[in-house]
Image (cartoon, rainbow, N blue to C red; front, side, top):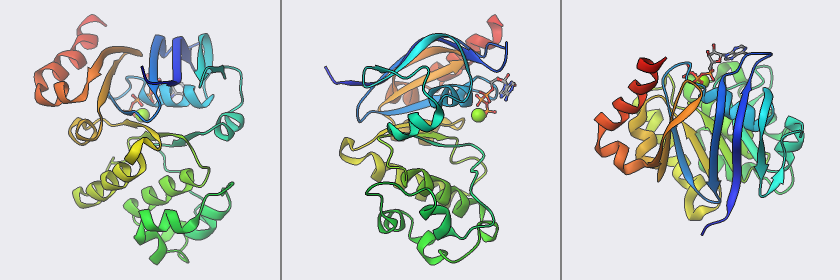
Length: 237
Ligand SMILES: Nc1ncnc2c1ncn2[C@@H]1O[C@H](COP(=O)(O)OP(=O)(O)OP(=O)(O)O)[C@@H](O)[C@H]1O
Ligand SMILES: [Mg+2]
């Protein structure tokens, strides 16, 4: 049995009084590559935000390597090794690429490692955040999260709106991040094919609950299965 690194147990969470996630349970092993699939508004971002402590947890709990972190601040969760690359790619536009990285850098994190992963960022290191293309901004957003040395990387639709060639480069970078089980990677993607090619395990979220949890290959080889699981919530809700 592999070691559980992150677990959501019967989590009901949302914004204010609203419930978005409903009794959601998910247990992730160290070094796992997990794809999270679901339509717009299914609750994917809310799940990542809940793991980071950015939503209201109504009931249930979240554990990190066995420790209950349900009441920990987002900063404390980050210090414990959770790293979110937000869907909004919120880099600092007024800082250069290099400043964006050094300002959040921690411990043994190295600029060279980030630049090795994304050579393009090294070329652009003196450029301001606003001078970057969408793909470069996404690379910077990912590199910035890596500066906090996360053992668990949560990627929220990193391919959204980017050209196929850039998506390929990003997927290659994710392969490197996850290589040798060094990091646990949770990849949220609406466009399933790339995510399922990367992941070993996949979950499908519909209306704040998990309707499929199993092999990524099975979903990839049977698109009708994916359609069925995404379709289930639409007909029942
Ligand atoms: N800050 C917020 N305050 C209130 N409701 C919110 C907030 N953010 C999201 N929601 C609601 O929560 C539900 C789930 O949204 P969420 O952003 O988690 O979906 P998603 O699966 O990430 O969708 P997408 O693929 O479009 O990013 C939606 O009904 C949305 O309107
Ligand atoms: Mg989202």
